[in-house]
Image (cartoon, rainbow, N blue to C red; front, side):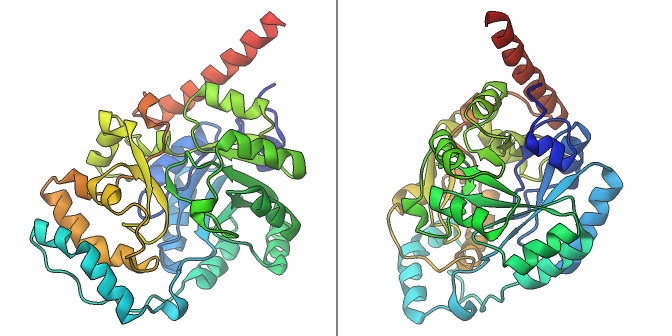
Length: 362
């Protein structure tokens, strides 16, 4: 059976279909529960949340489903040493972005306050909560933490954008690896080299990792239907993680205009940009992103996000979509479904039909 894989057996799910865990407030309890209740693995991105907020969200998820689910954190949640940045960096960002703030009629922000990492406190809470799956991005976890997860029956999943990262993750003792191709929407979770130099496509990356790594591999990026899932499984994946297609569903916490944009002609064009958060991420092409390609005049992550927050708010209020980054992957133009349960059913039925067709033609 196509759905009988090492991932489904290990995680206790019916289908090798994972919902991408969206950070930045885009995840929702309803989406996680819908996917998990339908036999997949729902995922909640918690890297922006306080430990207390994570506890509260986890309670809500457990009240909505008794199925396995995934909580996701970022090992590296800041690029600012000590949470600080220089006056020169601030002035460069001001020179680069002040015109956009003037255009929407809001003052350029004062220097953002230093950012204090929250990862260790978040991690402590996740270990106490004991979700079935704990996925992480932007780095490696210490062997002692991975061993504690094993003792607590928490499956660990790390994200890789290159073969070297996958090898490093396996050597660290992680249970599974997500092979994240450059087609994927959202941030590029690179950690051994620059994100700009870590842009292998999903199916090439999957095959490279499959040749060198023994633990289960989950394909992510450019997958939104049964054909994508079947292709990933054929190339050696043990499961597929789907982000943009679930982000576009009504159950996600994306703004209505964000979901509409993913179904519009604008979704045909995406780009990788650091202009909005300070880290490289893929979203629908916008003027700010286009005009700042290749430029380094921004604050380190996540302080650039703080800097741009009032601009984003004003642009949304004024419906100046060209000044907003709507996260999305390259696969968005083929999206069809707006309800997560319908999407899940379609993914299962399409994948099953392809495998049944292959059987009859052999």
